[in-house]
Length: 304
Image (tube, rainbow, N blue to C red; front, side):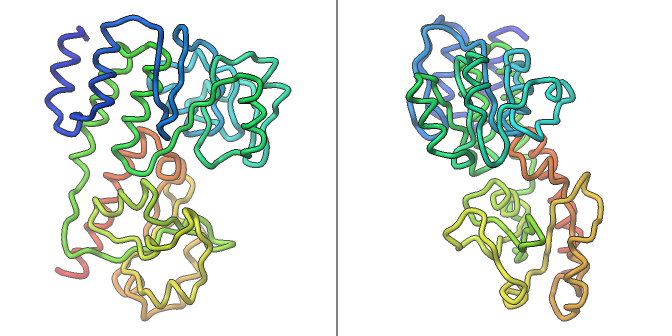
């Protein structure tokens, strides 16, 4: 796609009137050195586009591949399984720790970390060794393409990433825009212990776009543990769990005894694909559309 065509496509999308986007567009036409802010506002400076990248979460790995940077990834976290090529890359971290020795051997230009997802002490060691850290932080669906835009700037591949990012922005308005009535929803991340998400999550944003309200949006912890009694008291019309490939599993069986709950009365026990919804990636936008369709069916049963 020609540069002028890319700009024309991007400018048609209203939500792209973002200051960072203007910098992104100008970066397509202008050379380095590179100055970019990560998703937390931290400024990073590079003398040239980054070539060797460490990705410390499966979502980050997927996002880098999505914008054409897969060949530059030299290390990933455990469970980085999409796309299939990611399985061939050296594993340098898991949910508990970072393999600092292996990372140093790989000589990365930058480490991309999930904000709040790694040990601050270990990340501090990387900083002390002058390894730049780009923090990815996504709270809404619209944050996904914005974050990809920043990663692309850092790598200097805007001309490749621009149409992909423009298509992502164009998809967001297609996700249902808060149809009524608003349905109270419980999003079950985990069954034992029973865990959910608060309002600072792209999942809560997706629910809101689908016309649902996260019943635990008000909790101060991003991934709080709750109890069954609290869920029953808030009486959700929807109980949604993330499972493998969006297939029914045992995780929702625990709710079948509570027949008076609205979610049971109106067949509001729903499934979403864990890899698509719990990892903030371009595929999350597609899964959000599917979730909206499921919620619309429940709304029809409540208000025929």
